[in-house]
Amino acid sequence: MTRRYEVHPRQTGTGRMWTRRRAVPAAIVTIVLTVLAACGGGDQDARAESSAAPTVVTLSPADVAVAVREDVGSGVVVTGPLNPYREVEVRAQVPGVLLGLRVDRGDAVAAGQPIVRIEAEGVRGQATSARAGVAAAEAQVALARRQLESARKLHEAGALSDIELEEAEAGFRAAEAQLAAARAQAAGAGESAARATVTAPIAGEISARHASEGEAVNPGQAIVTIVNTRVLELAGQVPVDRAVGIRRGMPVEFTVDAYPGRTLRGEVARVEPTADPGTRQVGVYVRLPNQDRELVGGLYAAGRILTGESREAVVVPIDALRSDEGGTHVWVIEGGAAVRAPVTVGIRDERRGVVQILSGLEGGERVIAAPGEIRAGAAVRVAETATEAEGGR
Image (tube, rainbow, N blue to C red; front, side):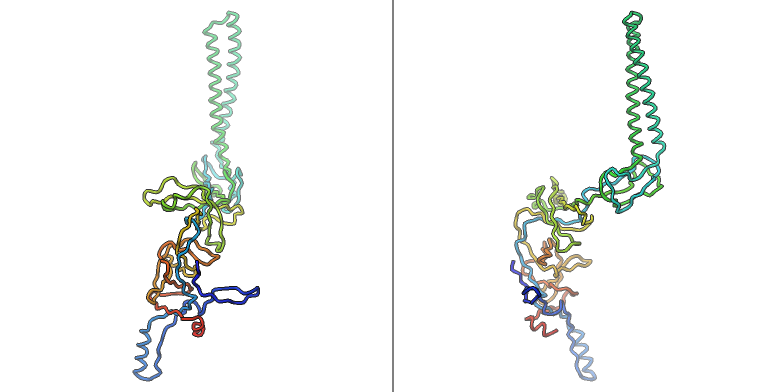
């Protein structure tokens, strides 16, 4: 793309470089007042004439940019917050009172690390009773085994009938069944007792604590939330026609508002197989590695999926963007006046100082690319040359 901004050379300590130079301060608002140096009724006429004079915004050529169309790098844009890919809400599984809760928001935990103990005497009592039941059932099995061995010997000697031998065998099988049931009951009770000690299912950080020390909890009640921010994920939506070319593993370039001028790289994690019937949008999930945990979850980001295709888009300087309660917009110069134009923004290229406009602006339109307050309908005057503009300052 041919940049349409006036540039002037300036000398630096390391040599000659080109920079944008503003001929006059950005968006200088001049109120044209004609004051008559006369007395009497002439003063009143002068004040009436000056009050009707319109507001004029005087700009240098460097403060006005032309929206141009250019081939932007292949890609589909998805925007949204970067949330931790792994997030677990740890809940109580047995009723009781929380004891030993020593973690809070921001604390790091390792997988399997004890977080809190639930004082649940009833559960522990059931586990103890179940273990005793197993011991009793094992004794019954041992006794039934000895009785069966004796019955077999007597049956071989002809001192015991077939029916009596079958009764001994049935008693032994019944004792074994009771032992199996006791062991199953003990296993369940043991698991419940083990759940009284709550451990971290994943390594990460505590992002929320939902209960406090000494609080009584019931099964299913949330205690803490653990997140792992080593991988962040952005869940976005793209139109059906753009989703056709997106595949798992495609590279993604991220720009994050909190880190201007930096480009981070990730990849497409998965693509939903069907479109939403109401919006005709397809869900796309892209991931960003964050091994050093430099980024925090919840940052707003824009990701560009590099699909390998080229697409033409409107580009303007980042300085042209304005944001207020009405949304993002630019000021377009139409008929010598400033007109507000709401726009939808795509990828920001901080290195080049430009931003992609997805909708709301056409190529060839002139926009005000200078900071400062502008009023809708204000007259806009562009200085003919930089020299003239500087002379007017």
